Length: 218
Ligand code: DC
Image (cartoon, rainbow, N blue to C red; front, side, top):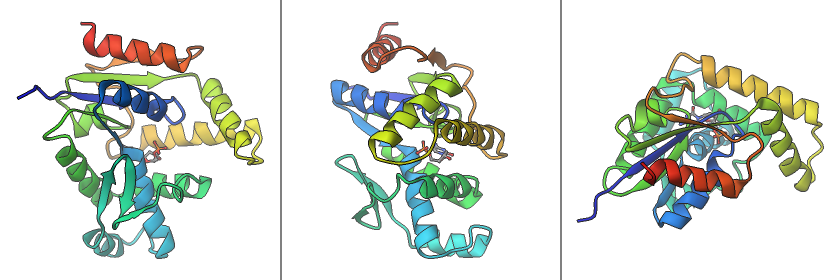
């Protein structure tokens, strides 16, 4: 049997985690698990069902009848692909709120560990190296300056025809950094044994090559 290996990628919003993880997964022919999409899917359900995120009982009742899975790279919420519903500014906020709820993290972390138990994966998020896959063979902390991350996001939004200004995007990034890094439960932190990779000024191809070097060049 081939040895399985897990690559954990953590870092702040807009550092390029999903673009890089997707490209590396394709090259290595392993599964990519986007844990942010899972928090977004929960946020989407809380929002569509008008559940009060402050009500622990209501959130738990919802979680008990919720199924989250990845099939062929698509995020399925109760069997339905919600990939095109969860990438809005509203769902970014909902995901951030829901990701601070202990019962939500408990359920999603359990699913994430199950997904990585029997096969090689590359998983990205905020707490993969520090919590979900503490024993991952490879851990990378991907970062870039707030200005560069805002610039990348601003360009993406412009291509989609959105009207947010660069200053608004930068402010949003700073707020999300603050929220993700200061929340009580599993905040965004570099794992002690993670390799930090600052991608400011690097192209996607350069980052992918460097990640592969970190993973297999040692
Ligand atoms: O990576 P993203 O922007 O799609 O993540 C959405 C939200 O979920 C973000 O506020 C951080 C949170 N998140 C988390 O707390 N833990 C993870 N492993 C992944 C995402």
